[in-house]
Image (tube, rainbow, N blue to C red; front, side, top):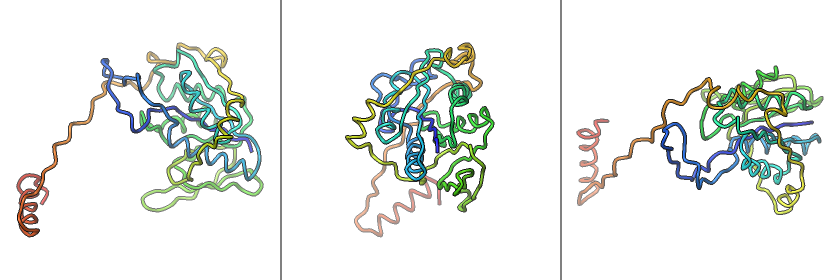
Length: 264
């Protein structure tokens, strides 16, 4: 089976995020960048399917040159080749623009399944997967925690958690699946895998290469506008409950919850 995984490079969850002076973006200097964790589940599932049924795993990303680091990580895990859409005109594009660029690459490729993360941990929109499927005219199966390929490899059955229950959906292939936490446990890249990744093909394409008009991308072409970014309010300092005995402390805690927090 031929599988495509679309991934995004995002700031590390442990990175301190600072809002830029324009209040619409973040300061990108000195940020540690990683593969989006939900996309990592997609890479792992693609590799497991390849190991069982054979085929090829292609990694595709849209972003600046540094995004090759995330692609190389996936190649080190075991993917076969990568494609990066790298064009200055993409800077500031919204989810619709990114999906359009990804679709322009994928439409000419041979594939059975496309994996994306169910959302990116930076913008937290969760739009690209479904939009990409719409552009390609294929079914979209979202927030998936289990994937089962049919014996004839012509359909897929997926499990999706919903309201404490599980929905089982079956779809013909090709289809797009957005990966959720719980789908699998991603592997670590081995040292031999890291060395092999350096020699695996990684192609770069511009919007012009894909026959796309750069004016349809970037900040000016956004349908979803960022009005302002604001940091979360500072948390009030904690309070130590005073008292000589556990009973006194419990009584004081109850008083504070009633009179100050007003939750009881």
